[in-house]
Length: 292
Image (cartoon, rainbow, N blue to C red; front, side, top):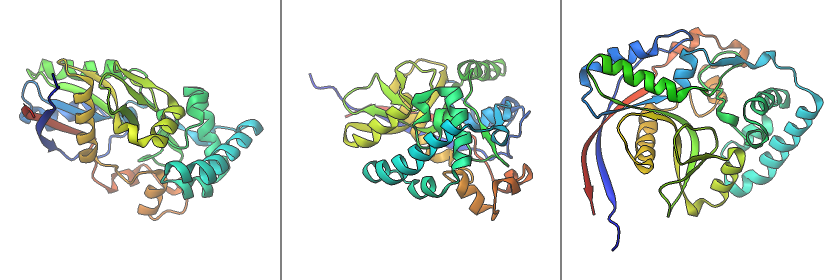
C-alpha cells in the first residue's frame, strides 16, 4: 500500500523584540508578547542564538591566543582547501569571505571550535560547532547551549504555570540534511538534543553539500519539549520558522559590519545591536493536517 503524503497548513505570528542582552529575562519577554495569542497545542519556535546571548553563553575571541599549528592548519584548510578548492565543487557562498578574512581572526575561532566540538567541527568552513559570530559586538561569539533541552522544558513549564500548554522548539540556522527517502534520521553539522539527529560536524556539511540530490536541507532543530510530534514535522516547523525569524544583521558577521558601516569589529558596540528590530521567536498554529 502506497503511503500518503501528509501536509500541514499553519498560521504564523511574529512579535518584534528589542535585543536580548546578556542577563535578559527571555522567558518573561516571551510570555509577555505571546501569552494572549497562545492556545494549547501551539508551537513556539525560538532562536538558540538569542537564548544563548540572553543566558550569557558568549565568549570574547579577542582573548584567544593562537598557536602555530592552529594558525597553519587554518590557513591551509579555510583559505586553500575551502576557499579555492572545495567551495567551487560544493557551492559554498562564502568563498570570497574565506579567502579574504584575516587568518589570525579565523584561527582564533577555529581554536575555540576545536575546544568545544573537536576536529570534526574544526574542519567546517563556517559556524563551526554551532558557534555563531552574528548579531554580537566586538569579537564576541555565541556558544551553543549545553543545556538546551532543559531550557526548552523550563520555558514549557513557565507557560504552563500561566495556564498555557505550548510546545517549545529551539532551532539554529546551521544546516541539517535529511535523506530524501528516510524520515527518522537527519545529519546535522552541530549538536542537537533531538532523537534521530546525528551530529557529523564538518563531515555532515561536506556530505550534504556534495550529494545535494539525496538530501533535503533544513535548519537544525536543537531541542524540543511538548506533545509528541515526529521528526519530519519538527523539521518542517523549523524551516517555516527560520524564514520568519530572519537573519538579524545578515547571514554572517561581515554583513553586520557593512550594514552598520563600520571598518572593524572592534568598532561595533552593544548599543549598535538595537539599531534593527529583532524577531527571536515565532508562534505557529497548526490549522489543518491533510493527506494526498
